[in-house]
Length: 273
Image (cartoon, rainbow, N blue to C red; front, side, top):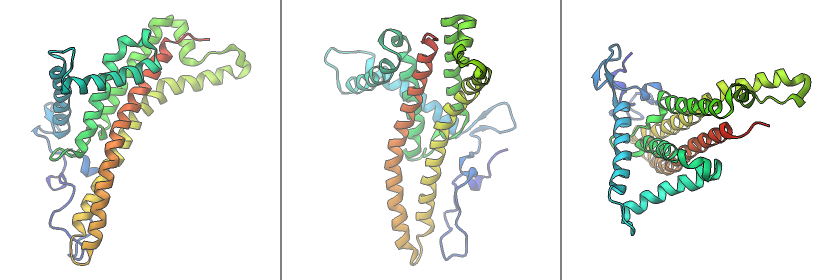
């Protein structure tokens, strides 16, 4: 079902307080966009969020390609920034969580995940785009699924079927009579709750942040009439404050996502006791 074209902007530009129209609060319609190609009922469908995801991928790949295509012993500014970002994730996340020996092979994946997610989040505060791709649950879900498949496959590859089952189920014969219940809870947690929360944590934070930004932005415009101008100024200040806060949250959520990814990988590689 496609969105109403009047709802794509999230509010009516001619609606102000004291004009006899209610406050056009943001809602689910603020996350729906008309297809740029095809329609929602066809097999060919391409909308704004897909375009932003594609552009974000091109930007991330293009940035690192430009930075490292001709690496120098004395790096230039672009190479220096790229190396700093790469090294931060490699040493601060992968090495600290998995270890240098085991973790080195997963550095490219984790670095790619971090910068891709960060770019998808950053679209929220970039003019014209102004929408975080990760506030659409499908994108965090696919990323979490990639990590989930990697975690499960690594667990079985490292420990074999029996060892993997013990690893995932938290098998510990010292638990005695409560062992079956403990294993059931652990299996439920690892196989269902873990990938769900991994995706929802990113989605929920970006969804809530974008909604708040929309709320104060729309309120600033809606109150811009008569005595409401004074309140519009306060609302606009909140837009600036929330934008600055979103900058922090966007980077933090990308960091948390890859930190959990490394934790899952470490758990898959660890010996079960």
